[in-house]
Figure 1 (tube, rainbow, N blue to C red):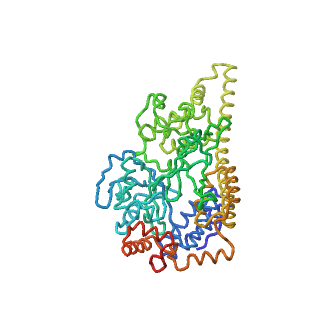
Figure 2: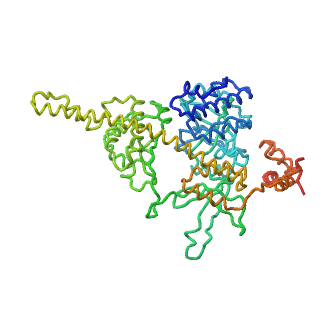
Length: 562
């Protein structure tokens, strides 16, 4: 059944007219793709995916629909909400194929993007459909390239709400980093048509080799300041500056002097040259919805909250300014204990302090209070237990027999009523402000997304970037401030075109690729088979033969070109 924009409100509330239109477009595209691929419960999946995409960036939804039209798989990624805190306790086994790691927590049952992933769903689909003979890969940052494959998933199991994976790491660099305790964050890729695990990724994985980025002006006096360390990640670069890590984009071709250029966002600086701090609310609505009372909550009473706060990590606080410079002033409202569990005692304490909070903006404070109230409601904390000190004193006054005070009692009663009205007005105003903040955030993201998409189209149409660079350049632009986006586009617009868009250019490109192996039309497994045959035929390593395939040195017949 084709959906219309007006159908959106039957399935999700609070959408703008533009978002309702996006909802219908996504739902209809998913339904068409799902039915074409013989999927089950296609209408349900179409509605769930449309619900998850409607409130996001419109350009992202458009790209998603474009991918479906080009017959791409419907795949969603889910960052794991469970962390590997003690790697040393996991069982490992060294095999001929690599390092086998048993029982790595990779996913937790809960509601994600308007869809419930229950323990039953995990058992029936993720675990029930898993087959180790299908070679479900372990990737670096969801990179689809076979060069980013770190190993294979050998088994899936579940205990309580958490799904665990047995992983076989075959990449030497990955094994070394695991043994050093450097890989703790995971994300799963799910094929939404077949409800199967597509792959599991290690997130933010610096991979392959080291590089150096040099300043144009390197002298004996400033060489120490202008040499920056970077790590290559399959064509992406992570640059370390003043203790901060940035993802950089490298120019596709060297300039006239043979130098490569790197583009990366730098944190904004204040007038004194210090990195500007940004306020963060360190828990989102999805995490709150998925709180498990038995597993995630600490019921133990904490007497000395102030003393405990001094020893807690930044992640334990509901509100922080990043980077943290003052542990007392840049962190507020601790809600987690040393083990990372949400503490009942800390929540109650935070609720009494949030209205008197100083040093943070009203926007951040209102947002933090809204999240705090949701947590309290989720945990069933009595309203009285989280009233502010002022409210509790007011309630004590209301219990007094004011008639005994005569005229003064009447005045006091009237004052109490005025205070109550003011508090009620304040609560209503805060709620309205919260709604407006969220609306403004959604509209700003939508406008920013359109602007980035327009710039990407302009750069692609003028040949400044290739189609293959479109996605990574777009992701990079979305990390920049509006000012830096304009600066980046200006520089790129003045740069030499990387693609010849003339008719002769198209003919030259066709001539160059004629008779060569077209890797864009082949699956990774097929490319690997060609590389294996080449390696055997020419008595070279598989890696060298694979490089030939990607460097255009192999014919469409699978033979090495002379």
